[in-house]
Image 1 (cartoon, rainbow, N blue to C red):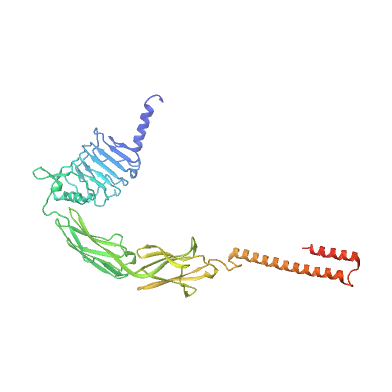
Image 2 (cartoon, helix red, strand yellow):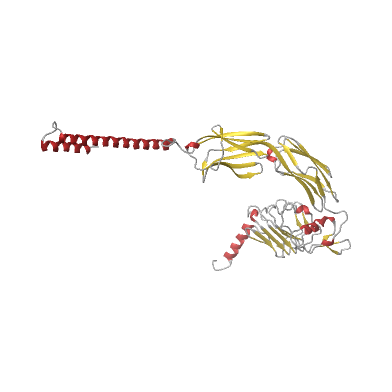
Length: 440
């Protein structure tokens, strides 16, 4: 068996089974390509459940598949990691509106030389495409494809595609020259271009839209936290925002008008004024400098004032406030101290104030202990060392004093008439003094 082709065929069979690759296609862990026209595929290629992970597929290449005519809504949804989709020289006629709804990573689409007569911009409006190639399709000249002409005209790249459509006489018309009556981009007009409001208040925005074909209108409020509701008709709409939260300051609100040709929007940035809040204040940390870290929220920007043990802290080049990061209405910073000592230990109070109110918080800071005395085990060690030094000094002083006394007595003994007589007595007394000095 090892000498024949059977092991190779068996291995190839297991590989195909593991990847569950459709007939006329080849598959790897990240790519599917189907370019064999016989027998070909009649539906968009799918990997069988539990056989491979479709999320890892980044490229699908399909060519020469004349019987592939439709992409349904659920054909591509499993390939959430898909970046490049190519279907060329095939029979593609229809793409469902929501076919790419879950394929937010799509960047390149190539539908060259298929059978597409119409294609809606709704397929692609949520995608950030770098490339959409549509050359060689028999588009019908209508308002439905005017968005493609508009897309070509607004592209930043000078390269344009040579696109055509068929008019009622089946004559090829360059898409760049296409003129369709009553078929143009809509417009949106928001009544409040500058919007500043106090926290907790309510506001109402109004918008009007125009266009032919008649556009649909909707509000894009992103991830707005505040409670809101809207009322819209075809050309007029209002948005009511109540109990406005400070978390919504800086967020964009848009009124959008959309029709077959494209869309237009008018936007406003919501500015919310609110009283300061100190959301973070912690004990000092040591880095290049000592730092008492804090975070303050407020709009307008709050004025900051520090107090040390109840008195105003006069800042200098050695002690000063530093703002390191600003995130719209949030300020992250430090009270920076350069080489603080025990004289800087104490209570530090931060007060943040603007025209809408104020907030304050206090933290106790300890940089180092008093000389010879410190906190915890370190303090005990320092105290013990100081006592030892003191004891050594006292003992040395006593020994020195005793030495002087003994020398004085020695001298006195040699000259006194009441002292020990003779050489023998002198030697005895000297030995006694030396033995005393040798004792600890």
